[in-house]
Amino acid sequence: MRKPCPTDDIGLVTVTYESAALVSYYQETAMQFAHVWIIDNHSQDCSAALFQHTLLHAEVLALKHNIGFGAANNKGFEKARLLCKYTLFLNPDCKISIPDVLLLKEALDLHPEATVACPAVFNSQGICPGIKFRDYTQGYATQNVQKLDWSPQLPKIMPNGGIDGACFLVKNEFLHKIGAFDENLFMYSEEDDIGLRLAAIGQTTVICPHSRAQHLGGASSRPSLRLKLRKAYHARWSRYYMLNKYAGRRAQIMAVIKCLLASPIAILLYAFTLQKRHLIKWVGNGLASVDGLFLTRYFRHLV
Image (cartoon, rainbow, N blue to C red; front, side, top):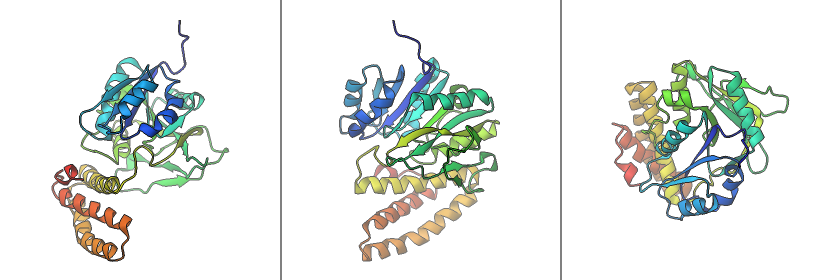
C-alpha cells in the first residue's frame, strides 16, 4: 500500500507545447506528485504521447487545438481543485524539489490572506536574476515591478511577490473564486491578471526566497522565426487587453496609436539594416496593434 506523501493535497498542472525534449527534465519533479495533469496544446512533436509514456500516473489531455496557456491551465485546474487543496502550476522547463514546494505550502498555511506563493527562480547556471515584487493593490500600469537581489539572508516569507508563471503554488479555493485564468489572454500577462483579481477580493501573493526552482527559460518549445513572431504578437496584444481591462479604453487606444505610428518606421529600419530579430518583433507588434484597435483576434490565427 502506498505511503501518504506531504504533497498528496497538491495537484501538479503543466501545459506543454512542442515540449518533447523536456520529458526527462520534467519527470524529475512530476514523479514526486501523486496527482499530475498535463495539458498538451496540440503539439506536433508527439509531446502528449511521450509525456504519457514516461509518466504513467499522470493524466495527459491532448487538445485538438492550441487554446492558449491560461485556457489550458484551466482545464488542468478544474480537475486538480476537485481532488486537492492546492495546485502547483509548473512549466515543463522548470523543476522544483519537494522540500521547496513544502516551503511554499507552509507560507500559504501561515498567511490566510495569501493565495499565491512563488519560489526564487534560478536559471540553469544557478543564478537568480532577481526576485520580483509588485503590490497588486495599486492597479495595473501604475507601479513598476521592483527587483531585489537574491540573498540567503532574506526572510523566509516576503509579501507582495510578483507572480512568476513558470512556477507558483495556489490555494484552490480562492483561485476558483476569481474564475482562475482569464481565457481571453492567450499568452503573457496571465499572472499579473490573477494577482490583480486576487487583490480585489483581499488576497495577496508572497515570495519564499529560500524555496528554489530552476527554470531553463525559453525551452518549453522549439525556437523558430514563427514562434518569435507569435510571442511578439501575443505580448503586445495582451498588453492592450490588460490596459483596456484595468486602465480603460482611452489608455488602451493611446497605446495602440503610439505603436501603429512607430511600427512602419521600425519595420523599414530593421529590414534595411537586416536585423531579423528586431524586424520580426516589430511585425508582431504592428499586427497586434491592428487587432488592438478593437481587441479583435484576426491576426492571431495567422501568426
